Image 1: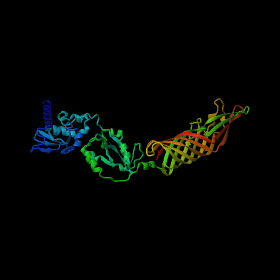
Image 2: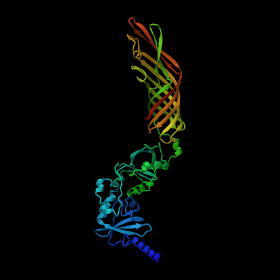
Image 3: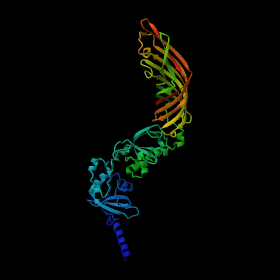
Length: 484
């Protein structure tokens, strides 16, 4: 008996719940007229827009909603539901035609206090679930890309699809009324490079592009729409996506293996500035003093010269291929004015040479930005000049009458260089190279003398300056290069 009563009660409960929203869910008054709440959603609000605007989400299985003006003061919504009976809800006309319409039209601007204050949320809280949207001010991703036809496009990323992206020139909160005039569709097949991406080039590779645009940093931005998030997209954008993605202008793309065989397109010219030091010193300056009193001599060494500052221009021959490396020539201007020698001393020089590089290891799988290790071997011919005011290297205790001359020495060296370069590609144009190079050349010695007249009898001290070159040195340095 108790079980029978429980069953009867359960049946009554189900009947009541199925009719809780309307006395007659399938009957639409014949005098009613279907109305459009907002042009954004149209006459029939589909299931995606219902989710996007959070409408009727407390009712199970709603597939679509249509509004009918049943008299001068009431609007009835007819809710079509999945595998459930349709039902109706009735609300005051003012609530639907005024508050709900403004809510839909200004949905993205709800974080703006001026917009928020004009909406009567209590009036529509039985239709829409008003969420705390945090700060919905624009936080889209700025993007700058180059298409495979070399056209450059800049803007902000708005939509990510499975076949391409949409970029907008708007830099403010999403405005559905003007978006059609400020949006551009770029299929993945058309994208060559993206500025700032960790991949040097994409050349239409869909998988690499999907990986980039589905990155957490991209999708975490609330102003970006993406199918991969399974979040609803408003109808006006869905129409643009449908119309745009039907057109494909290219069918060719590069696989990841093909991308690994490429390097970024480069100008044949690069300019650079570098500095370094050699162990032991490549060129040494030896000072020998001969005393006028007893003919005794004393010596002291000055520091050496090796590219303390180098300005260079490089030209690359042939194709810049990962497998083969590069062949390049360079012209350099060299100086270390006041860097090693005392005031009024001056090293200057120039060099010309040729360099062959081999890629030993790409630390970034070759098709990404980052680092590479190269072995380089080359020849160069250097022309150097030393100008030295002798007075500045004499002992301070020496009384001086006058100086016979200034030291001027010219030297020419032929060098064979071989070393390892660690290249860090900072962006498409700028790179930093840390280098360790063995430099070898024929040893030589060159001498020049200066006689200093001192004392009341005009006795002399003789100062001998000797330049000498070691046969081999290890050179350590840094070279910054920029592609022209």
